[in-house]
Figure 1 (cartoon, rainbow, N blue to C red):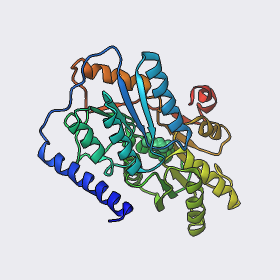
Figure 2: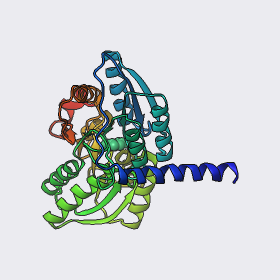
Figure 3: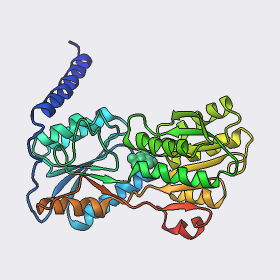
Figure 4: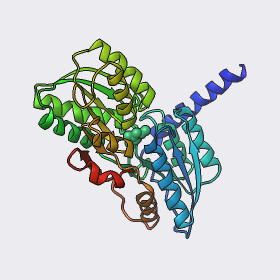
Length: 327
Ligand code: GYE
């Protein structure tokens, strides 16, 4: 076996082993967290390619520093395989607890199970894992983040009221297999369908990234020249889509309505400029809630399976007043 294939084999074997463990210890208890003054805590970030991720990382680092905890920080740079390796390295370093932002729902299951097996509690931050393969209160403590179905639903409800005759939708999906992409699609599509009168002419992943979003929007606008609404699962892709709309000689906000989720400063400014019609905030300020939840868990309090963040909503009625508060 050469080096690469042996490594691939080892990774596959670890993944298979962890899933087998999930089957045999499904009823084993969640690892406990001892009460201490300060902790050594891991934070396994997925990537750092947008202001949302950076705001989240900054919030986690600032809170850890404020409370005197040691933070072992890793950035998986957009690779689920690297993120699994990052978690394994945190386990090897003997962290007390791991905050994990799982890039995709299924590939991070082995990481959750490996931490559980090592006796290290995991709190999922901002994205979740496949609920049929790992459960809150059993395999990980809880999920802290936004209600993504609700986010999709809120932007769809706004559209139903404010479409002004526009009806043909291009949907730019987030990272394939990630919980926000799955749920933002579900919440939006179901609401639009129930309202009637709209058509999703194309729905494709732009991987939550600006340039990918621009490229996908460009191709889809060419294939569907009658599309007059773009719904992007995050700001980065919405901003990419605005460039694609302008490159096609159309006016965003006039010829094509752009809807987004995240609500960073650049997007709220785009609402003020009339280029984004409406955006649901996805709150990235996790630090205080994450560490508070960790301490509640250490005290032995019962933690809900989901700890939901509050999200704001921006459109032309409040964007100027809210700009200063946007991240
Ligand atoms: O919307 C996006 C980021 O998981 C909620 O991931 C998060 C999403 C967020 O990269 O911009």
